[in-house]
Image (cartoon, rainbow, N blue to C red; front, side):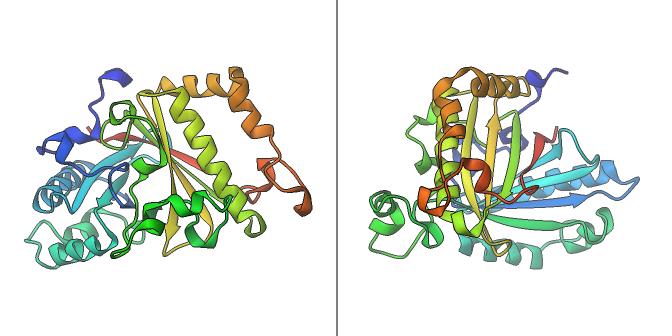
Length: 287
Protein backbone atom coordinates (compact mmCIF):
# COMPACT_ATOMS: atom_id res chain seq x y z
CA UNK A 1 0.00 0.00 0.00
CA UNK A 2 1.49 3.36 -1.01
CA UNK A 3 1.46 6.54 1.05
CA UNK A 4 -1.02 8.08 -1.40
CA UNK A 5 -3.50 5.22 -0.92
CA UNK A 6 -3.70 5.43 2.88
CA UNK A 7 -7.18 6.68 3.79
CA UNK A 8 -7.32 10.07 5.56
CA UNK A 9 -8.63 10.26 9.11
CA UNK A 10 -12.06 11.62 8.22
CA UNK A 11 -12.88 8.20 6.77
CA UNK A 12 -12.64 6.71 10.26
CA UNK A 13 -16.07 8.22 10.92
CA UNK A 14 -19.44 7.68 9.24
CA UNK A 15 -20.32 11.38 9.50
CA UNK A 16 -20.14 13.53 6.35
CA UNK A 17 -16.74 15.21 6.15
CA UNK A 18 -18.25 18.70 6.36
CA UNK A 19 -19.87 17.85 9.71
CA UNK A 20 -16.64 16.71 11.36
CA UNK A 21 -14.48 18.81 13.65
CA UNK A 22 -10.77 18.91 12.81
CA UNK A 23 -7.63 20.93 13.58
CA UNK A 24 -8.66 23.90 11.42
CA UNK A 25 -12.29 24.44 12.48
CA UNK A 26 -12.04 23.35 16.14
CA UNK A 27 -11.35 25.92 18.84
CA UNK A 28 -9.44 23.48 21.05
CA UNK A 29 -7.41 20.37 20.17
CA UNK A 30 -6.49 17.82 22.84
CA UNK A 31 -3.57 15.62 21.79
CA UNK A 32 -3.75 12.34 23.73
CA UNK A 33 -1.08 9.67 23.49
CA UNK A 34 -1.28 6.10 24.82
CA UNK A 35 1.03 3.08 24.60
CA UNK A 36 -0.68 -0.23 23.85
CA UNK A 37 0.11 -3.07 26.23
CA UNK A 38 2.16 -5.86 24.68
CA UNK A 39 -0.01 -8.49 23.03
CA UNK A 40 -3.17 -6.38 22.97
CA UNK A 41 -2.70 -4.43 19.74
CA UNK A 42 -5.71 -5.82 17.88
CA UNK A 43 -8.06 -5.19 20.79
CA UNK A 44 -6.64 -1.73 21.49
CA UNK A 45 -6.91 -0.61 17.86
CA UNK A 46 -10.51 -1.83 17.63
CA UNK A 47 -11.34 -0.08 20.91
CA UNK A 48 -9.70 3.18 19.79
CA UNK A 49 -11.58 3.23 16.49
CA UNK A 50 -14.88 2.41 18.20
CA UNK A 51 -14.41 5.09 20.86
CA UNK A 52 -13.54 7.70 18.23
CA UNK A 53 -16.67 6.87 16.25
CA UNK A 54 -18.91 6.74 19.32
CA UNK A 55 -17.81 10.08 20.74
CA UNK A 56 -17.79 11.83 17.37
CA UNK A 57 -21.30 10.64 16.53
CA UNK A 58 -22.77 11.26 19.98
CA UNK A 59 -21.19 14.73 20.20
CA UNK A 60 -21.38 15.91 16.59
CA UNK A 61 -20.54 19.62 16.44
CA UNK A 62 -19.21 19.55 20.01
CA UNK A 63 -16.35 17.05 19.81
CA UNK A 64 -14.68 14.88 17.20
CA UNK A 65 -11.90 12.30 17.49
CA UNK A 66 -9.38 10.89 15.00
CA UNK A 67 -6.82 8.18 15.76
CA UNK A 68 -3.24 7.99 14.45
CA UNK A 69 -0.07 5.94 14.76
CA UNK A 70 3.48 7.27 14.75
CA UNK A 71 4.79 7.15 11.18
CA UNK A 72 8.31 6.69 12.53
CA UNK A 73 8.99 6.34 16.23
CA UNK A 74 7.54 4.16 18.98
CA UNK A 75 5.52 1.25 17.69
CA UNK A 76 2.06 0.55 19.10
CA UNK A 77 1.77 4.10 20.41
CA UNK A 78 -1.59 5.59 19.49
CA UNK A 79 -2.29 9.29 19.18
CA UNK A 80 -5.79 10.69 19.51
CA UNK A 81 -6.57 14.18 18.25
CA UNK A 82 -9.68 15.25 20.12
CA UNK A 83 -11.21 18.33 18.51
CA UNK A 84 -13.49 20.46 20.68
CA UNK A 85 -15.88 23.28 19.79
CA UNK A 86 -14.86 25.06 23.01
CA UNK A 87 -13.00 24.47 26.25
CA UNK A 88 -16.35 23.82 27.89
CA UNK A 89 -16.89 20.85 25.57
CA UNK A 90 -14.48 18.98 27.84
CA UNK A 91 -17.34 18.49 30.29
CA UNK A 92 -19.28 16.54 27.68
CA UNK A 93 -16.35 14.14 27.29
CA UNK A 94 -16.17 13.68 31.07
CA UNK A 95 -19.91 13.02 31.23
CA UNK A 96 -19.68 10.45 28.44
CA UNK A 97 -16.88 8.67 30.31
CA UNK A 98 -18.98 8.60 33.49
CA UNK A 99 -21.95 7.18 31.57
CA UNK A 100 -19.97 4.74 29.43
CA UNK A 101 -21.17 1.17 29.10
CA UNK A 102 -19.08 -1.92 29.79
CA UNK A 103 -16.26 -2.16 27.26
CA UNK A 104 -16.24 1.57 26.54
CA UNK A 105 -14.91 3.54 29.49
CA UNK A 106 -11.97 3.91 31.88
CA UNK A 107 -11.73 0.20 32.70
CA UNK A 108 -10.93 -0.61 29.07
CA UNK A 109 -8.30 2.14 28.92
CA UNK A 110 -6.66 0.63 32.00
CA UNK A 111 -6.72 -2.88 30.53
CA UNK A 112 -5.47 -2.06 27.03
CA UNK A 113 -2.85 0.63 27.61
CA UNK A 114 0.35 0.76 29.66
CA UNK A 115 -0.15 2.44 33.06
CA UNK A 116 1.14 6.01 33.09
CA UNK A 117 1.42 6.23 29.31
CA UNK A 118 -1.86 8.05 28.67
CA UNK A 119 -0.99 11.73 28.52
CA UNK A 120 -2.78 14.79 27.15
CA UNK A 121 -1.69 18.18 25.82
CA UNK A 122 -4.30 20.90 25.37
CA UNK A 123 -3.69 23.08 22.31
CA UNK A 124 -5.46 26.35 21.53
CA UNK A 125 -5.15 28.05 18.12
CA UNK A 126 -2.77 30.99 18.41
CA UNK A 127 -4.06 34.51 17.82
CA UNK A 128 -2.20 37.83 17.80
CA UNK A 129 -1.72 39.31 21.26
CA UNK A 130 -2.31 35.99 23.04
CA UNK A 131 -0.88 35.70 26.56
CA UNK A 132 0.08 39.37 26.73
CA UNK A 133 2.41 39.37 23.74
CA UNK A 134 3.09 42.25 21.37
CA UNK A 135 3.14 42.41 17.58
CA UNK A 136 2.87 45.88 16.08
CA UNK A 137 0.00 47.48 17.97
CA UNK A 138 -2.33 46.86 15.02
CA UNK A 139 -2.57 43.10 14.50
CA UNK A 140 -3.41 42.51 18.16
CA UNK A 141 -6.62 44.50 17.66
CA UNK A 142 -7.78 42.52 14.64
CA UNK A 143 -8.49 39.20 16.35
CA UNK A 144 -12.10 38.12 16.82
CA UNK A 145 -11.45 37.84 20.54
CA UNK A 146 -10.37 41.50 20.74
CA UNK A 147 -13.22 42.78 18.56
CA UNK A 148 -15.94 40.62 20.09
CA UNK A 149 -18.46 42.08 22.50
CA UNK A 150 -20.12 38.93 23.82
CA UNK A 151 -18.71 35.96 25.69
CA UNK A 152 -15.07 35.29 24.81
CA UNK A 153 -14.47 32.47 22.33
CA UNK A 154 -11.23 31.15 20.91
CA UNK A 155 -10.83 31.74 17.17
CA UNK A 156 -10.31 28.54 15.14
CA UNK A 157 -6.99 28.03 13.35
CA UNK A 158 -8.52 28.76 9.93
CA UNK A 159 -8.39 32.46 10.87
CA UNK A 160 -4.58 32.28 10.72
CA UNK A 161 -4.57 32.04 6.91
CA UNK A 162 -6.12 33.83 3.95
CA UNK A 163 -6.25 30.66 1.83
CA UNK A 164 -9.64 29.37 0.64
CA UNK A 165 -10.95 26.22 2.38
CA UNK A 166 -10.33 23.98 -0.65
CA UNK A 167 -6.59 24.76 -0.45
CA UNK A 168 -6.26 23.87 3.24
CA UNK A 169 -5.21 20.53 4.71
CA UNK A 170 -6.18 19.56 8.24
CA UNK A 171 -6.27 16.55 10.54
CA UNK A 172 -9.21 15.07 8.64
CA UNK A 173 -7.89 15.15 5.08
CA UNK A 174 -4.08 15.10 5.47
CA UNK A 175 -2.06 11.97 4.78
CA UNK A 176 0.48 12.85 7.48
CA UNK A 177 0.15 15.18 10.48
CA UNK A 178 3.41 16.39 12.01
CA UNK A 179 3.42 17.76 15.55
CA UNK A 180 6.29 20.17 16.17
CA UNK A 181 6.97 21.92 19.44
CA UNK A 182 9.55 24.36 20.74
CA UNK A 183 10.13 26.15 24.04
CA UNK A 184 10.29 29.90 23.58
CA UNK A 185 12.87 31.99 25.42
CA UNK A 186 10.92 34.16 27.86
CA UNK A 187 12.75 37.31 26.80
CA UNK A 188 11.72 36.80 23.18
CA UNK A 189 8.23 35.33 23.64
CA UNK A 190 6.59 38.00 21.45
CA UNK A 191 9.16 37.70 18.67
CA UNK A 192 8.99 33.89 18.72
CA UNK A 193 5.24 33.94 18.20
CA UNK A 194 5.60 36.33 15.26
CA UNK A 195 8.23 34.06 13.72
CA UNK A 196 6.03 31.00 14.20
CA UNK A 197 3.09 32.58 12.41
CA UNK A 198 5.14 34.07 9.55
CA UNK A 199 6.85 30.75 8.84
CA UNK A 200 3.53 28.90 8.89
CA UNK A 201 1.84 31.26 6.44
CA UNK A 202 4.85 31.26 4.11
CA UNK A 203 4.41 27.50 3.72
CA UNK A 204 0.64 27.77 3.33
CA UNK A 205 0.94 30.27 0.50
CA UNK A 206 3.70 28.41 -1.33
CA UNK A 207 2.29 24.87 -1.01
CA UNK A 208 -1.51 25.26 -1.13
CA UNK A 209 -3.25 21.91 -1.10
CA UNK A 210 0.06 20.16 -0.36
CA UNK A 211 1.05 21.39 3.10
CA UNK A 212 -0.87 23.50 5.63
CA UNK A 213 0.68 24.72 8.89
CA UNK A 214 -1.08 26.23 11.89
CA UNK A 215 0.21 27.49 15.22
CA UNK A 216 -1.15 26.54 18.64
CA UNK A 217 -0.45 27.47 22.25
CA UNK A 218 -0.23 24.93 25.05
CA UNK A 219 -2.74 25.43 27.85
CA UNK A 220 -2.60 23.80 31.29
CA UNK A 221 0.98 22.70 30.66
CA UNK A 222 4.39 24.18 29.88
CA UNK A 223 4.15 27.97 29.59
CA UNK A 224 5.47 29.62 26.40
CA UNK A 225 5.67 26.34 24.50
CA UNK A 226 4.71 26.84 20.87
CA UNK A 227 3.20 24.06 18.76
CA UNK A 228 2.91 23.77 14.99
CA UNK A 229 0.57 21.24 13.40
CA UNK A 230 1.97 20.54 9.94
CA UNK A 231 -0.51 18.80 7.64
CA UNK A 232 1.06 17.02 4.65
CA UNK A 233 -0.82 15.65 1.64
CA UNK A 234 1.36 12.54 1.83
CA UNK A 235 4.82 11.54 2.98
CA UNK A 236 6.41 12.66 -0.29
CA UNK A 237 5.30 16.23 0.48
CA UNK A 238 8.03 16.35 3.11
CA UNK A 239 10.54 16.60 0.27
CA UNK A 240 8.53 19.44 -1.27
CA UNK A 241 8.80 21.21 2.07
CA UNK A 242 12.57 20.75 2.12
CA UNK A 243 12.80 21.94 -1.47
CA UNK A 244 10.86 25.11 -0.62
CA UNK A 245 13.32 26.02 2.13
CA UNK A 246 16.30 25.49 -0.17
CA UNK A 247 15.13 27.11 -3.40
CA UNK A 248 12.71 29.89 -2.47
CA UNK A 249 14.67 33.02 -1.57
CA UNK A 250 11.73 34.77 0.10
CA UNK A 251 11.17 31.80 2.40
CA UNK A 252 14.89 31.47 3.12
CA UNK A 253 15.05 35.16 4.05
CA UNK A 254 12.61 34.53 6.90
CA UNK A 255 15.17 32.31 8.62
CA UNK A 256 18.08 34.71 8.18
CA UNK A 257 16.16 37.83 9.17
CA UNK A 258 16.95 39.57 12.45
CA UNK A 259 13.97 38.63 14.60
CA UNK A 260 15.58 39.79 17.82
CA UNK A 261 15.55 43.61 18.06
CA UNK A 262 18.89 45.42 18.21
CA UNK A 263 18.07 46.75 21.68
CA UNK A 264 17.86 43.12 22.86
CA UNK A 265 21.12 42.15 21.20
CA UNK A 266 19.87 41.24 17.71
CA UNK A 267 19.89 37.81 16.11
CA UNK A 268 18.01 35.37 13.90
CA UNK A 269 15.21 32.98 14.87
CA UNK A 270 17.79 30.60 16.38
CA UNK A 271 17.85 32.73 19.52
CA UNK A 272 14.08 32.70 19.98
CA UNK A 273 13.85 29.13 21.28
CA UNK A 274 15.78 27.26 23.96
CA UNK A 275 18.44 24.89 22.67
CA UNK A 276 17.36 21.28 22.29
CA UNK A 277 13.64 21.91 22.77
CA UNK A 278 12.49 21.70 19.14
CA UNK A 279 11.04 18.26 18.38
CA UNK A 280 8.83 16.58 15.76
CA UNK A 281 6.63 13.53 15.61
CA UNK A 282 4.88 12.39 12.42
CA UNK A 283 1.47 10.73 12.59
CA UNK A 284 -0.32 8.52 10.07
CA UNK A 285 -4.11 8.01 10.30
CA UNK A 286 -4.90 4.62 11.82
CA UNK A 287 -6.18 2.31 9.09
